[in-house]
Amino acid sequence: GSHVLLTGASSGIGASLARQLAKAGATVGLVARRTDRLEEVVADCRVHTPNSRFWPVDLADLSAAEAVVHAAWDAFGGLDALVNNAAMPQRWPVADLAADAVDEVMNLNFSSPMRMGQAALPRMLDRGSGLIVNVSSMGGRIPIAHEASYCAAKYALAGWSEVSALDLAQT
Image 1 (cartoon, rainbow, N blue to C red):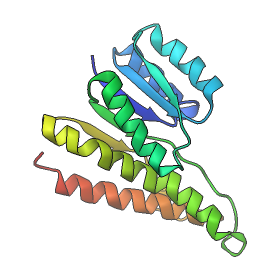
Image 2 (image 1 turned 135 degrees about the vertical axis):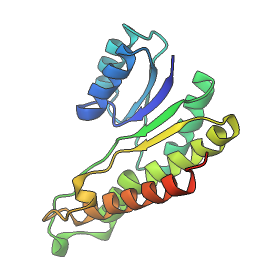
Image 3 (image 1 turned 60 degrees about the horizontal axis):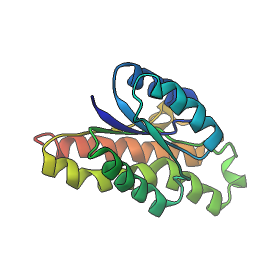
Image 4 (image 1 turned 135 degrees about the horizontal axis):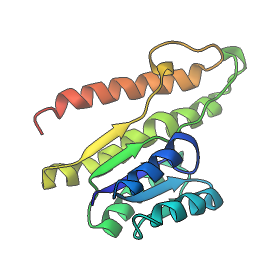
């Protein structure tokens, strides 16, 4: 009976989690860039929860990331959980990284989940319930060669999530 918004839902962990959540009875809102893959995943989810739906959105577009939270909230009459799973690597040695490429990774892997969480948080606090899950990585704890921007974003996401847990512990 829960309503869950899940990013990075067109493949991998996100697609698998979407199917598991739907099988357990959650209506899922799926977000990713690839419409064709989202259609396949949502079709599997609708076998269990027919009101599941998807939004094809590039979450590196921060305004679009915030907007999809509001659209899903309105479509479902609220969200019980937001799972920020979308991410991208950037496999380049530091000396070869362009600032724009780093910004793109930071936007998708850190700024997007932070801003999506901040978009959902006031409504969750007003309602008195809700869960925000930020999927990080061991790359957010241990450096990975040629993944400076990915690791930086995941370190930031881990820190943000840990402070958020402290700040919201009594809510």
